[in-house]
Length: 242
Image (tube, rainbow, N blue to C red; front, side, top):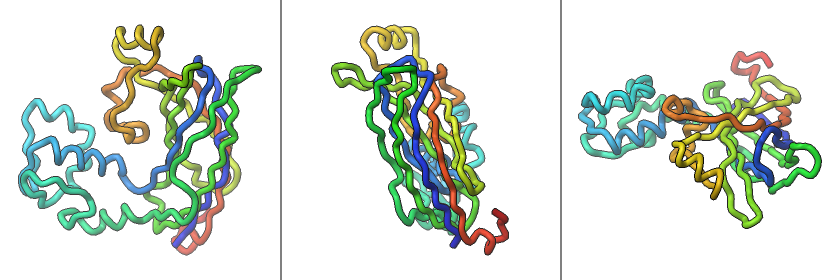
């Protein structure tokens, strides 16, 4: 199998109106991971028949964004919740989902809280060290980020969501990841200004999938700065020039 080694750090963030910032991060691999979670949700919420998805007119607008996922569905038993691990789904899909294997490192983490004293940049210098084995290029790793702020009482509120693809060429790369957050109604905006809080995403996969984001009213946040170095191995065996 080919190998991808990602070494780097989340250096910090700039451009946020909030202070005392920290960042939660995670990495996702595998093809169409957002489709998997959405299909799993749809199976529980929408009536199914074997091989055919029966939709009323009011249901159709809600799944237009996952129309590309429908060919993946076959022989779904009426009323039965299922996932890609079950035999109703094609074996090729299940195999591609397992194409990426984490050999070492952790898939998620959290930085410390930093309060800038000079300038507006929060420094984290949080290390990232991931070693993957893979059978193909599909489902290249993606980093998803959540930036939070903490007040003097220890209460936390969301400052921004963001994601970026891990570079696919070897070497050292400087990445700037812009962030955004849901805006909410004027009541929620007013409440956020005076008591904190604010709307958050119910499903975290919307950060990097884009499938449901068209419904959201958002506002831009700051920018997270990353430095990532990549080492690639054995890709030439699969006809990929690095």
